[in-house]
Image (cartoon, rainbow, N blue to C red; front, side, top):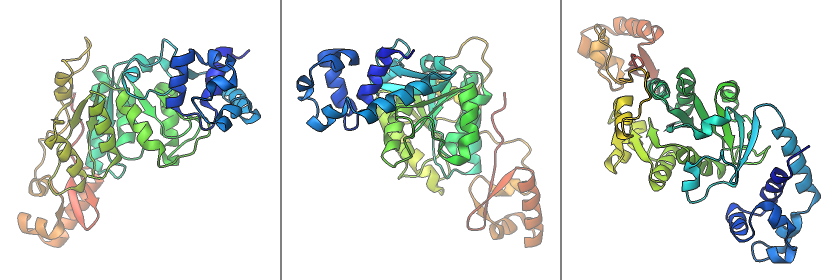
Length: 366
């Protein structure tokens, strides 16, 4: 049998037009959703339009409640309400906590110390390496890694979190049963099996532009701090960082090349008070030296490899073209091109648009 208390939470949250602010006002006035639904509908008129109040008891809402309860009965699926003990304490501190959360996976991660790692969808190869290595180091230090399951930095952060001991939490901008972006569907399944998927949106909610700023406030709200790895000036990651600052969370940013558009957002954050970090230890120190006993060293991720001779020694760390390398190294274009191909196959450099190349630093060394 389905839980009538949960059914009442679903009835009020799945009613079209009954927003979270109006629902919170009703909860404050009348108590739990069961008490709200027991009230005469005229008593609820001060909180919503007559059409919304009438739809509380509509057949489509009742059918949506049944479908959602069926989903919640599957192994690993949970619906967490504001009244539940397992509702994340940090979310209660933000200005607009969602009335309920749909989750799939390890529910206990909602109570685990967490760190958000976010950045560009169109990340560089080095940015993804940095995100993954920082996330793994922080996960091994005891922080679950929170991100948004987007392409680029988010996906790399989740992979790093899964590789560490504290795992990862993916906050979705869709219904929890919708896999978006499709390219990350296998990663979502790994997170459901070994981490936690979270959404505030009803089942079946498709991706929409307005969903993702709402999702971003939960990414930062679930975490003690937020690390931005790569971000352009007009970036959703900066929305997450601003939300983190507004919520009283620590904001961290990785510096990058002054020539890279994906460094501009991080540099802007640093100019306005974000902490510049070069290793996971920098973050741990800011968060009060958090490190459970037995955790590995987290000295990470941006130090150059000692074996950087040959053409790599002439590349520096900014993107560079073939002609410049020929001049610096005193080699022919054919020699430089051959060496660049070898280095790219070895995973030491990456090619960029515009005929540019950039060296890749290896991940954190433990």
